[in-house]
Image (cartoon, rainbow, N blue to C red; front, side, top):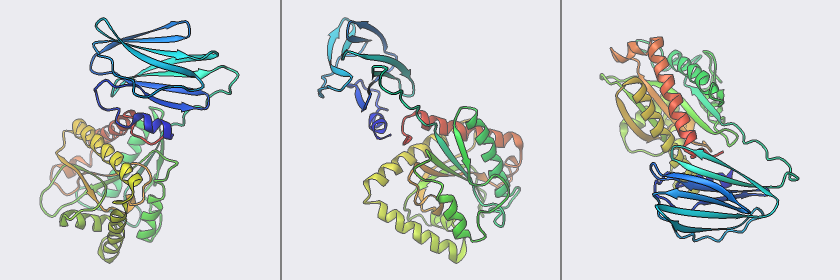
Length: 350
């Protein structure tokens, strides 16, 4: 929802600021960022909700507040901290919720019960795309890419669903979506639409020289010939891969002037960083960083979208580990934790 996104942008700052305000027809929401280990208390005095913070100086409230549920608010210093007073209109009720990562206090003021009940917020929907499959085995070494990434996707799906997150798979067995590679990639990419929350394409690497580790990509241009070669390979290889990569690069150049697309790419970057951090922490694998590349499957994503390379199938050590159930479980756990961390950060566009 747009009002929710507006509330959450920039909330990662740990500095104490005036509350962010969002409204619906029957609801006013105030979100306070709580720095560090600061403590707070709430009380009701007549038609006023009093919120006291310890260890935080008050900030000037630059925005006047007058909604169908709230008359206004004011801030004042108090011993050892600051106090905020929110004045409610008659016939309203309120509830509060404490959130973490970062710490926030949410105050929701709702109109009387004669107003229809608020609809429950939709659950996040995550699209997991196990790369290749069917006619296309992907990279082959000590293991086959198509088999490894499908197993990791299925494990990740179970972990996310256990936390109440809906998961859509682009494939759930060893199959392709189309015998045409361009059509296959297009059908996968089409699932990254605005009805879903985020999109993760899962792949495995191979290299002529010994290389190992996890790397994560989000969509964008690159002048690195190694990354262009990788994109061509993932985009179908050969003449087809070159054509689809050029199409994706054209999209990347066009997005440079699209502010909404640039904002979405920033969210994709945050998803990539959190995912890589969690997967490396869970597995102990080498971190090969977060980079941009023109991958066709995430070129038109209208939601945060990344491509994860979980390891190198032809590395003498990592390739063999990718064939074990224990290591795949670690990769899935890290991937799930990264996704959950992103969803909890408030950057997901839902």
